[in-house]
Length: 215
Ligand SMILES: [Zn+2]
Image (cartoon, rainbow, N blue to C red):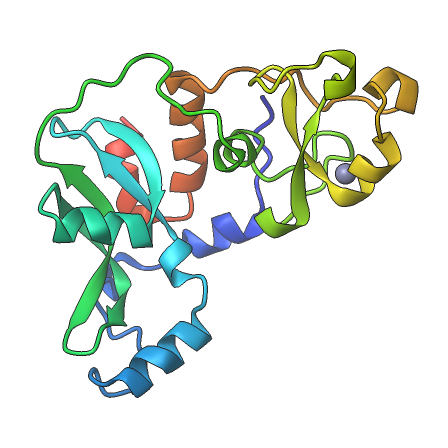
């Protein structure tokens, strides 16, 4: 697996630790839906920011989005271990955004716990088109059946890859060989090992993840 990663992860990971908890919402007052709206408009992707999920034992087990992590906190299933330097505002409250959360009850994680889903395939392939090698936003990627379904190709970890629309169109209903395309790497199931590697890659962007991932 290549260690390539977008430059922004590196530069964003250089945030000074003492900036944590600083008022990232800028000079805006911390209450009211107007603030909520303006924050959400300025930071439309905040709720999709990655949050590291630790087991009750502090073992990193997953990456989720801020939105999902905040639901787990509100339900009392998890507690925040590290905070993002941002807030989201509901009608009555300001909620600090978690960066790392920990499950309160230990969860047994089977070796292959990842559900086969579009989201997880894009995550496994790191939003990289497996034919042209370019990195795209999730919305600009589709899933390609390496062996087309019309040829008996299955919807499986080994036969689904992230693919940009351009490559998907040029491949059409053909195998990569027939279309003159080459896979960047052989698609594999998403194991806990893959998951750890990806958590570490993502962890480079967030200082607060490091102590849980680099040991
Ligand atoms: Zn492509």
